[in-house]
Length: 309
Image 1 (cartoon, helix red, strand yellow):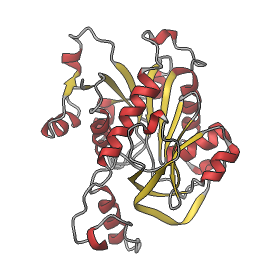
Image 2: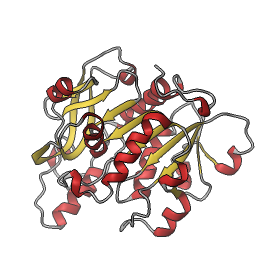
Image 3: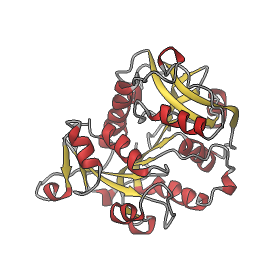
Image 4: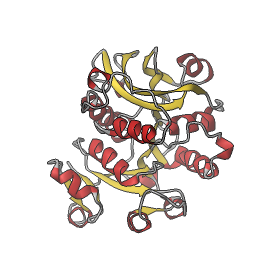
């Protein structure tokens, strides 16, 4: 089944050109199907690029998804046209009385910014706490994981002195866990962050279950026992060239970035990289939608029970 998105969203043509089945809102309105309502809080600067990446992963599900894009209220974006935001995004006040099957909170380039200095920190807190009662399952990605751990578990901001950038091997911790069902015992995933997620901190200070980790990246995939909150500390949504674009952006700015690990062939930035994590990304999002959202959400969202298991 397809994802349902607004007719004029740029992702419609991008994904159709990739032979992805996309259903516009106009066509979906004529079908008598209860789609899953998925909200995406997009915190990344290049919002259109990020939309394409997440919608691509969500599109591979057999479930029909009704996508709603959410932005921080009235926050001006330097990298996305205001017209695009006004046409395709809603503010929190527009949806705060609604319930959703799923919520995805993206990363943000705030790895070295203290929480108190994030200009929209109050709104991140508000939305995260709102999700406890209004969303069946929320998936936090990269920086959003760090923010959620602080809001939900009071874990302080932990950062590394050097940026973690590259594609890393991870090991499955719980082979039978629903979120990693079908994964290989070892799999690759990209990371681009200063945030630090030591596995021992997660185990000692939360009741979260770790599903995948590595010595280099720390905890990668973990979730609450009731599946209401899931966390991915890397960027499974990244395109093949996203890390390359970040590297050359920083290089051109004179920041002398380290070459992303295990990414460019022969560690040569002049050679085109290839995606070695794509199948993992698709499977991760399918598992989240199936086991954390679809199999737990009520048919009538007005009957959502925040304590269901």
